[in-house]
Image (cartoon, rainbow, N blue to C red; front, top):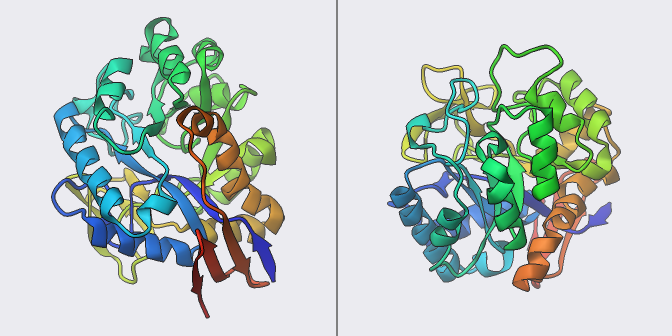
Length: 342
């Protein structure tokens, strides 16, 4: 048996049949269902993640999500804030991925602050494309406001990445993804981020988003201290059947192999990964010890978000996960809410 602090997923769009990006169907009961299933995977904290949409739609989705969190039983303990992935991304084909390119726009800090103005919890993390941030004003302003800046779906070159890091950029969102299939073999946005020691990097360790041999190389480049395991999960995660599931106003299809795509497209649309499975994967593939894998899914995300927590006066409740020797969750406890699993 192993006992650890609870896991923390900083990029999760939905879970267990529940779409966090829905302004129509998300409610407290659905959110509690998703969070209950997350507990069975060892996750005791998360940042529900909203993807690119028009500003009006994002406002509606955040209001719906925030209402569900306020009214839910588990949200007050497990959700300290939110992650906004877009709409300040690169709309070019290959970089935009499954995000609606037509809703992408140049980054403006005031738009982020306006989106959270009436929310009970802050937007703690923002993924954006720094090549559109003139003078690094977006990064500098939001970093001073306590936000954690991450880059993703971006064509930024090495000088741009380094300038952004100097202005407050802290992380690469799902590094290795949100990139075109054809890039310069060495002088490209992924190598620019790998070379920047100021950046941590999120990795989706499902064997689909990044082939295991490539993940091994990326983890070596970033090191355990700067690597964060994430799921990028959608509503198709932690469900028993392949099929069609809702995600941010579109339908996505979960295949037998666990991949999630826009139907009829090669574009991945999030994942069906659970965070405990990501830990088991990197251990079974021989890329990290169990303790190192848990660190990448528990301590490292908390450490990344520590400046934001201090700025907003956020304290996460105590949590504990008991693991079997096979790396499955035996029990999970957060804020004295204890769950036992066979």
